[in-house]
Length: 79
Image (cartoon, rainbow, N blue to C red):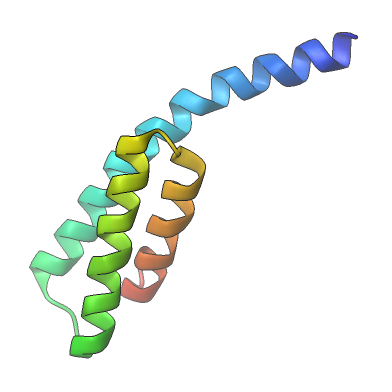
């Protein structure tokens, strides 16, 4: 029972941390796009789609999916 309680507490504490990470990731992506990149137009469009999807997921409260989606965009940008 203690393990279940501990797992629940960790989960509850992790959610706000992930929620706070999303805006920082979005800002990093926006800054990298504003600074310019050598990505192709197709890759830039994909990065923008991933960024927008990450924003939508964050706004909907799905922070795990948002963080993963934004991580994909950041990886394409090399950040």
